[in-house]
Image (cartoon, rainbow, N blue to C red; front, side):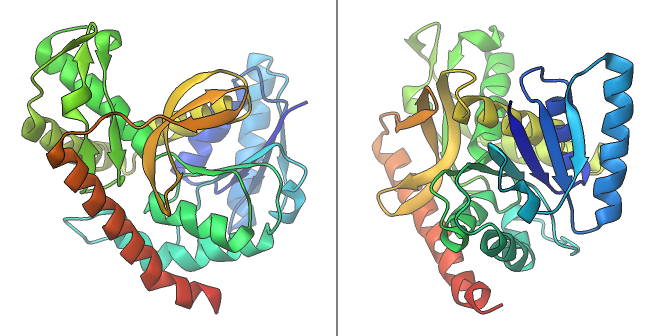
Length: 297
């Protein structure tokens, strides 16, 4: 019996709940939110969906404390704030979301299962939750979404099947994402990657989604469910997730075997190595700026 907790019942949380209810491998979805009303409403909606589709997945309204018996918890709440940033958009939620994530971490101190972080800035929030909770298996989904967008965009530019593209985006889920062009291949062969064109699309793509439907939801939700499948031993393989590495936390490829991750960073050229160092430094600074505040909030 597999139970997954879902903290946050907004656009992304609703989509994650729907995917889990339709997954076939999850038995129970336990939902909570800052507004108990939204969590209860999502549970009711998932119950209706389950009845219509014949899904065996049970939806339950609970509290964060009630999730301690879950195999995994997905964290995707968003503090109430207006994001007016035109650059570094994801990092703009740092000060607003940090107290919320730190408080959840303290509520779930010592939790023994897997935690999948979705809330932005996801790399910093992943590290913050791990620090405040003491949980040993905390991962963020940002680079998974970036890598999917990278492969899709490059495949379209080169007019090749997406499945033939092998490549990663690592580092920050944000303006300093590192496109690993030097190790990217198509059908196993090196390829010239139009990096600036790709970077422009990686920046423009989520904005285009937000303009049309209000918030990105399906991509991050899919990344969260894929992260659960890997971390809970449902599938083996490589997925790009935020994790600790040599004192820093950022997105990187992890190879999961029976739920156990191994870091498998691709080889980087000199430019990419400098970019990764810059991304790590930026994330470290962001974490340091909110650590003292959240420890006492």
